Amino acid sequence: MNQVRRALMELAAESRPYTVLDKAIAEGLRRRRRHRRVGSTLATVGVVTVLGAGYAAAGPEPGPSVRPSGPVATAPVGASPTDSGSVVGPSACVGSVLPVPSGFAGRSVAIGGDPSGRFVLGRAYESGQARMVMWTDGRPSVVELPGSGDELRDVTTYGLAVGSSYDGGRSRAYRYENGVFVRLPEQDAAATTVNERGDVAGTAGDRPVVWRSGSTAAQRLPVPNVTVFGDARGIDEDGTVVGSVTTPGAHAGDEAVAWAYAWSPDGTAQVLPIPHSDAGPVTSAWATSVRNGWVSGTARIRTARGDAMYAVLWNLRTKEVSLSDQIGPGEVVNARGWRAGRGADGPVLLTAGALIRLPLPTASRFDEAVGVSDDGTVVVGTRYDPADSLASAAMVWRCR
Amino acid sequence: MAHDDELREFLAARLDRLSATAYLLTGNHHDAEDLLQAALVKVTARWPRIHELRDPGHYVWRVLYNEHVSLWRRRRRRITAYAEEDLSAYASGRDEAAHVVRRLVIQQALARLTPKQRAVVVLRYFEDLTEEESARILGCTLGTIKSQTHRALAKLRQVAPELEHLWLDGAGVR
Image (cartoon, rainbow over all chains, first blue to last red; front, side, top):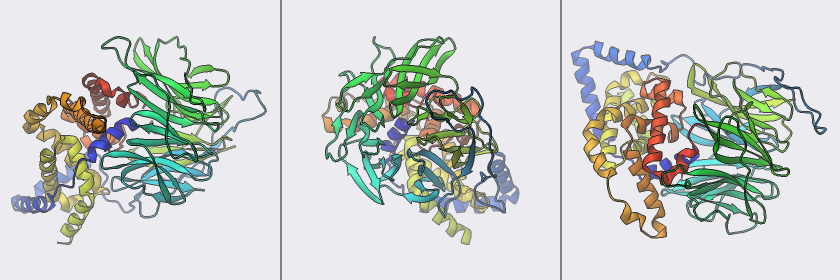
C-alpha cells in the first residue's frame, strides 16, 4: 500500500495549484442565481441527493463520532497459555481512544508504536488533509516533516522517529528527534525502521539500504542482479535487517516473485525459508517486521479458489517458519514473538499460548492493531465507527 | 455575502490538495484545470446548502470525483494518445532520469484504467481512504469498490510489469 502511495505522491508533486478559483466562483454564483429564479425546489432536490449519499447533516455536536465508551474488557479466547519459558502473557486488555491534537476534527489513525509502549505514531485529519502525530505518554503533538506527503514509520523507546516525505517529487528519508529533522543521504530514499542504537533501514532507488548509527553514508544491502525491487522493513537490535526482494518470474510472462530476506549485521543476505501450506503453493513471501530474532510477514498462496494472503512467523535462531490462521497478514511482532494484528473478528494479540481479543464497544471490519510493546502490555491500533467509516480513532489497549 | 467569503476561504485553503487530486485523476495539467474548475463551479452553486454539512470537504471531494467520471468521455481521445506515447527514448536514458521514467511509466499505466478504476486507486492509495469511505465518495457499493480495485491492480500489473512491487504490497492484504 505504501508503495502505491509513494508512486502517487511522486506524481502529485508534478501538479500545481490551478488558478481557477475566481472563474469558478463567478460562474458558480451565476448558476446559483439562475437556479433561484427557476425556483427553490431545485436547490432542495440537490440537498436530498447529498444527504442520501450518506453525508451527515450538520448536527448540534460536531466532532468525532468515535468516542471512548468506557473500559471494555474480555477474557482470552483460544488455547490456554503454555508453560514454554517463564513469561506468562497478559490475559485481558482494556482499550481507550488517543486524544487528537487541539483544532483537529476528530478522525485519526495509528501507524505504529515503540517497543516500550510510550510513543505512538499516527495521523490526524483536518478537512481531509492528514498531519503526522506523535503521542508521548498519550499526549499528541503534530510533527511536520519538510516537504509534503510526510510519513513517520517507526520510533524508538527514547522518541527517535524515522520516516520520509516528498520534495520536488523525490522522496527523502529523515530521522526526527526532539523537534529536529536530519536528512539521511541517498536519492529517492525512504526510512521505514529504526532500532534502539539508532540504526535506520529503508529503501533508496528501490533497493534496500541501512544507515548505521554514526555513519554518514548509507550501506546498500546485497540483492540479486535481477532484482526488480527490494526493500527493508524491519531492523533488529543486533542490526539484522528484514525485508523483501522482488525478482522476475522464471519464464517470460510469469508473475514477478517476492522473497522474504534477512540481512545479517555483516551484510550477508539469506532468503528466509518458504512456509509449507496444504492449501496450495506459496508464490511469494514478504518479511515486514523483526524483533529479537522473530520475524513476521506475509505469504501469498495460490489456492484452488484464488490467491490468499497469510501471516507468517519466522524464528531466525531455529530457522523455523509457520503460517498462522489465528491472525491475518500485516501483523507486527514483539521481542517475545507475540504478534498484534487483525484476527477473524477484530484486532487481536497473539501470545505464545493465547489469542487475546482487543475489546471495542463496536466492531468494524477495518479495526486493527499495528504495534505491540515488548512486554505485551501495550497494543496500539485504530478503530472505525461501524456506521461511519469516515470516523476512525487511534487507540491504545493496556493489557495485563 | 458572508457565506461566499467563507466559501472562498474554504476553497483557497484546499486548492493545493484539490489540484493534486485533479492532476492524478486526469494525468495532465490542461484536463486537471478543466476538471477542477467544473467541480468548483458546482460546489459554488450549491454552497448555501453544502456549508451546513458536517464535513463539506468530503462533499467537495465527491463532486470532484464524480465530475472526473462524467467528464471522461470528452477526454478519452487525448488520454489514449498519451498512453501510447513511446517511452523508449526515456527508458534508454541515463541514471539521473530514472525518476522521470518511473513517473511516466506510472502515468502510462494509470491512463489504461477506466475513470472509475483510476478514481478508486487515487481514493484508496493517495487520499488514504478505506473501501467504505471510497464507496461513499463515489456513491457506489462496497462490492463495486472491491471489484474495481481488483481490476485496477490486475490491469496495472498487466500493462506495467516493471512496477510489480507497487501492487504486490497493496493487493489482497486488506
